[in-house]
Amino acid sequence: MTKSFGEPVAGNRLLASLSPDLFGAIAPHLDLLQLEQGLALEYPQKLVEQIVFPVSCVCSMVAVGDQGRRIEVGLFGFEGMSGTTIVTGAETSPLEVFVQIAGEGHVIGREVFRGLLDAHGGLETHFMRYIHCLNIQTAQTALSNGQAKLEERLARWLLMCHDRIVGDRMELTHEFLSVMLGVRRAGVTVGTHLLEGKGLIRAERGVITVLDREGLEAEARGTFGPAEKEYLRLFGPVRAGR
Image 1 (cartoon, rainbow, N blue to C red):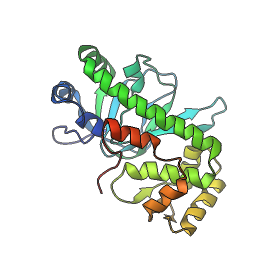
Image 2 (cartoon, one colour):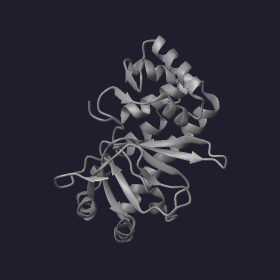
Image 3 (cartoon, rainbow, N blue to C red):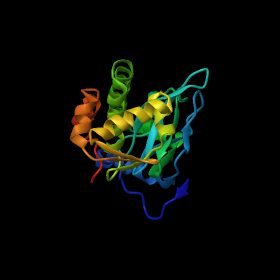
Image 4 (cartoon, rainbow, N blue to C red):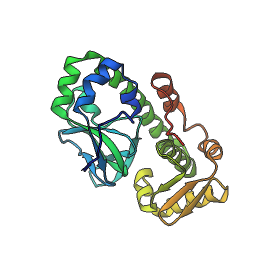
């Protein structure tokens, strides 16, 4: 992690939607850091040491099985935060959480954050509302994984990632996508070819570009949207500026 220059500014919708008093309480304790791709933020069954509020990075939440199999169960960017188990009081993480797309994020230590939650009940209420939205996203992921076709799941995942970046270009390898979707790389290749054949994306080596956002939403066939609508109701749109 590399310290960025300048004073921290919100840049994170979850922080920006705090009341002035609550934001004033947490802001002095935030360090704006550059977070590199692949940086681990949480380990399964380990104490969460710090909380990250992404600004331009995107983070992935991955469940890890006994045999080492991995599948993404959630993701967040500028609209969210890591370290939700600190808010709930569980302290340790059940998941692996890492930086999926490099960028900046505000970082605060566990003890300081825990103290702020104890001192300002409004902070806990605010972040619990976010956890509520994240639970909906996780439920939709389970529904999608269990019932949707691969290309529908891929369309949903690309939409979720697209929401959290500026622009239409995403640096994503097939190997990475195979972990995110819990399928073999050959399945990812088939899925991307299907979406590309419909003119929805352009897939190049290590890069996917969204060409038709509305078409991707139609391709997702209802697997995308419920969590985003609830977040909109509570905090604002889950969509980065373009």
